[in-house]
Length: 280
Figure 1 (cartoon, rainbow, N blue to C red):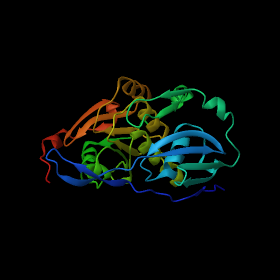
Figure 2 (tube, rainbow, N blue to C red):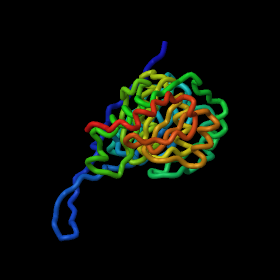
Figure 3 (cartoon, helix red, strand yellow):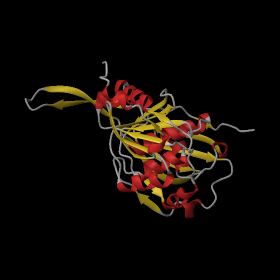
Figure 4 (cartoon, helix red, strand yellow):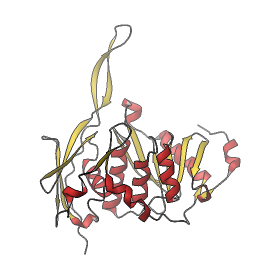
């Protein structure tokens, strides 16, 4: 019988109000993202420090451990305890992590804001990932997803300087929405929530406001998700990994425009919809 880990609920304030002066010498206040460090300890061993908004620190921690393949099952985790007074999170596992020093010794610092880090062995596991070949995405659903993001209330609209990620069903219903200072943290937070809720990725669509780098593609694949959408672009390595995995990569998704880079056979095209004016 599976046992869910004990989790704190330590969501922090996402923005902070600060005083500014404009080009005319006028004083006003604006909101900025409340970035803060979160040092992860696993069984009392310091693992990594993540820079985060702190909106979902427990989910971020779970997703980080999942996507780094350090913990194979949610049942292996006994508790996740966040303490903002010391900017740390303590993870207690049920049986420890075998060879943790060796598995975390080699790191690859990734591109982008929030500079993520990937433990080197992850690249060796890409060949073992198999995505569902029969998953399909309608063009009309893609447009529904993009429009949902457009109207989503967000920290970005209030304060800027953050990335958002979302998980959708194959019909375009949004399941999760997370914002953080870096897209790596946002995707990890969704991975953690999926893990905790027992949600499978095989019939899901993942959206990010950030670039589709190799790390983002690998994390999406580890979550079993066949569709990755971005309002931004991709990198050469992100494209290469997606092509190798047979993942459907969609970039520049704004309004009625998108570019299908890989996995185009999964798309159910409805090209006439591209000519339909969006009703505000």
